[in-house]
Length: 368
Image 1 (cartoon, rainbow, N blue to C red):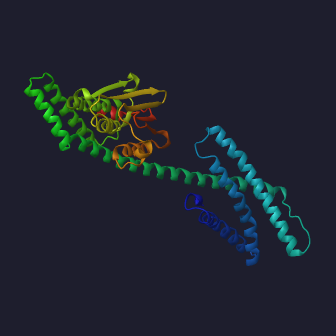
Image 2 (image 1 turned 90 degrees about the vertical axis):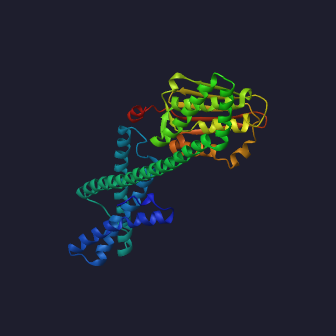
Image 3 (image 1 turned 45 degrees about the horizontal axis):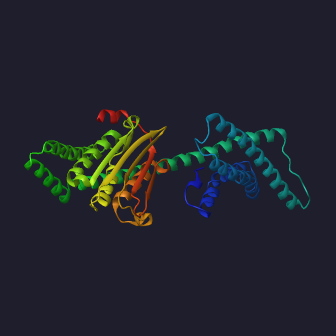
């Protein structure tokens, strides 16, 4: 019997469930016919055995749905199912007695109560327990298979979103407008003999190298300290371009630095703050990047005190930055990752991320 209830919906599910009992019905019918019974007798006795088992099996399917695989400790899980197996076996026997009694009463025209001998009852109870275990096992196999398919689909979506994020970050760093402004600022520093020129060139080269290096490595997760360093270089260069119009603060707890995050998860948020807050006005703009670890959660935030926006319009905006980060969070962490936007006209813009505080694996440590 396969897990018929993992595919389709409604009537199709229950049709598949009923069809899964046909092999057992055929086996009973064949055994009775081999013993010399008539076709009618074989059909009635087969239905008498299989239909009650199938009806009681609906309860097994529903119980497994209410008690998903891995939802409880091993002892409690086995204990619950041991009790339910006994209930199922008793229910099967009770339904068999009831249906056989009704059929014989209708057949003979006299009220009759079908009974089982002690040996028959003992055999029927044992068979009921084994049948319960079979139904439950197939149901859980279906649950595990569905979870694996969901994880594979989520991983494939996360990989596609990661590739898009890397390409967007790379384009943002090397687009002609960004290059022109940065190189123009570098030229002014060199011409003026400013001591920051050499550091600016080094940071710009490091930023491009880090961006391309992460893309080549195909790393989905990177240590937070690498992501923060990417943001530091990006903001330093933008401060070079915008001067006093941009003030940046980065606050990161030491115990948060070893945690891993999806590559380029912060850079689009910081770029969004620079583009829509600092670059659009003459007044100074502050951008604050924070990272903290609270228990098993990593909390990240990017906030600016710019002009803000109407939240409903932000949610419907065609821009890819925020939607990309949200999509990656959902694909990578599901319900374990959250993204919240807080903004209003004249009240700045803030994005908060909460995700599991994972630490580098051996492969990540080797990569570093």
